[in-house]
Image (cartoon, rainbow, N blue to C red; front, side, top):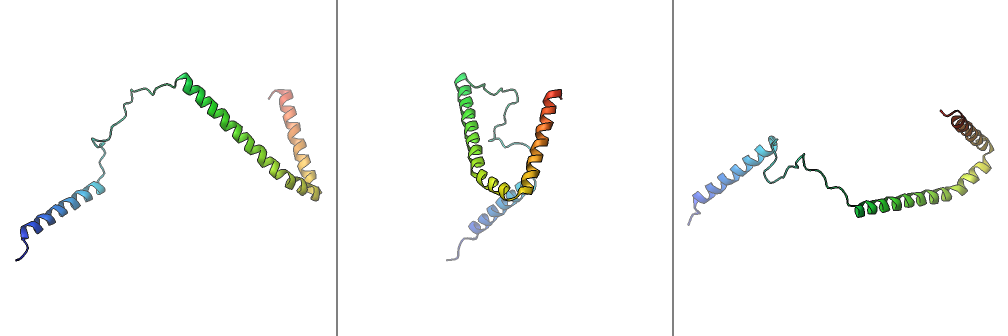
Length: 116
């Protein structure tokens, strides 16, 4: 028995309609939000944190600051022997660095003395 032609034609029509709808959606994006997407209200204020949440955030900030300081100290201590060795074996660079440090110190002292 031959397969029914109406079912095949209906399936092809449905597939063509779905393909057409997909092409329309991709080629011309909608500027209006979809009904399932809620839009935030501009008049709704964000809830203020409770005192306990503020303390938690302050505690977290302190913890992060301490961790960052510890990482910096560890990095300096790890690089210090190599830097010392470099400047001990390169006296010209050592003199240049000491002169640079002296100029920075002069500038800072003048800055604090004059108040500018």
